[in-house]
Length: 165
Image (cartoon, rainbow, N blue to C red):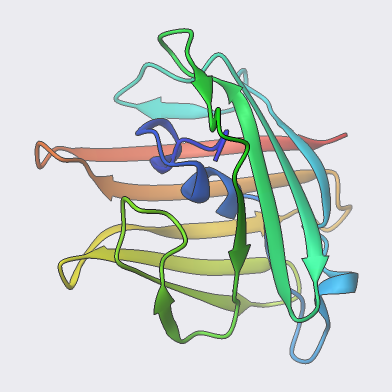
């Protein structure tokens, strides 16, 4: 997901989640503060371990009760993120669904408050990526915090800060 999930581990969907957040109780996707175009603010983001991507743009749209995200950018090695221009549809209902990203088997995305989401991705029934995505009250910033276990079993902790464009 332009969004290299764990957003640097090369999973576009995870990157996108950093942007798609929900609304309080019964709000619809159309009023979700995550809808829009978001650019990764490298100066405010933290990648542990790094290196960070060079650039990430996430576009989030309402799709009925769901959200559709498109991620593009340049990874740390200078390669395009999401070169196939794949869009991901996210169901935000707190239930387990097949993951739209092949790096994971299932995804659970749940709304937390008016401006946030909590998410987890599983592979072989084990959570390997989890975090939150919260849009600021003024709607100008989205902060995605993730903890992921990569293919080598190493822990990756990232805080991605995106500015609304």
